Amino acid sequence: MAGTPSKNRKRPASKKQSARGNPQKPGESRDPRHIEKATARDWIGAARLRTLPLAVTPILIGTGAAHLVDVQFHWVIALFCLVVSVSLQIGVNYANDYSDGVRGTDDHRVGPARLTASRKAKPRTVLLVAFAFFAIAALAGLAIVIRTQQWWMLLVGAACIVAAWFYTGGKRPYGYYGLGELFVFVFFGLVATAGTTYVQAFTVTQEAWLGAVGAGLLACGVLLANNLRDIDQDRAARKRTLTVLIGRRATQWLFTIFIVLAFGIAVFIALFYPIAWLTLLALLAALPAILIVWTYRLPKELLVALALTSLTSIAYGAFLFWAFIG
Image (cartoon, rainbow, N blue to C red; front, side, top):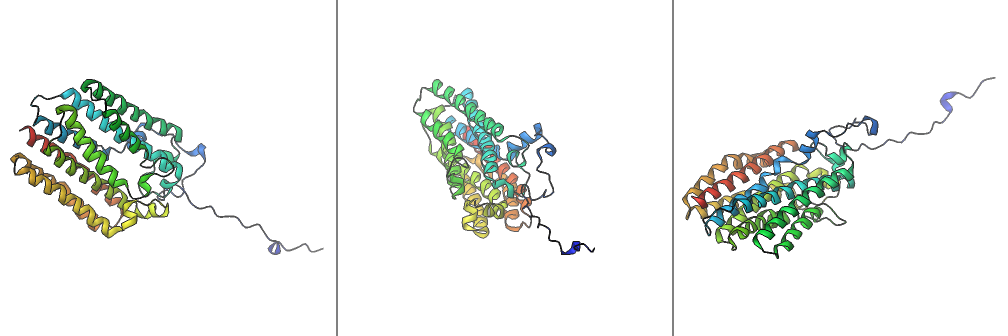
């Protein structure tokens, strides 16, 4: 007896699973048994060291501006301001890793995979590390308040931590609605710089405000370079950054305008504090960054622009500090 030909038998169609995770590693196994645990290098990388100069710049400018009012340096207070700023920066980076990871936003990343998205670390662990750095910032801020007796600044510190968390955290993170640059300008520009000056001099000078605007513009430039790199992935993940909303060309122009305005402020300050002319040396990093932003072909090239803009920021802050104390 002839059996039913095997070619006539219908086989259930296998469903194709969409690739998730880092697009650069599509073949990476998602089996937990084959995923390596995060190393110390992975954790350090997740802190995003390229962005840390943005936390140092406002402290340099704010401390220099305070010296214009009180020639006595308050190094302890300045150091604690630095701890607050750097801890917040690291904390928001880990919080971003956690929030984007659990939402699946980082599944579309072009750059190195994050701790949460790569599953090298448990989301809860990443979140706890973020909260640990927020706690360090809070304790350092509390120490400043106790030292200066400016208790109302507890509200400012609380606002900074809340803003750091809701950048990508919570149900409606403002970083997903094109407001990231605005908050970066306010908190890593105006608040950080003016706050540093105030706790040392109990006033905020015009020089501090001008420097704060410059620091904020450069910080926004770094964020623009980062979001320009991720524009396609963010659009796919429905993360509506300012870059996604306005497009590539407008982002390139905005990046350039921010850099030019920051150096325009430095030139104005140099009319009264000649050493500030040295700030123009930071253009050695800023101009290549602008060139890359306008001519890049691969998104990963923007990592160089990001690093150069961050380097520009700290050089900018260091020269203004020198100008104010010179």
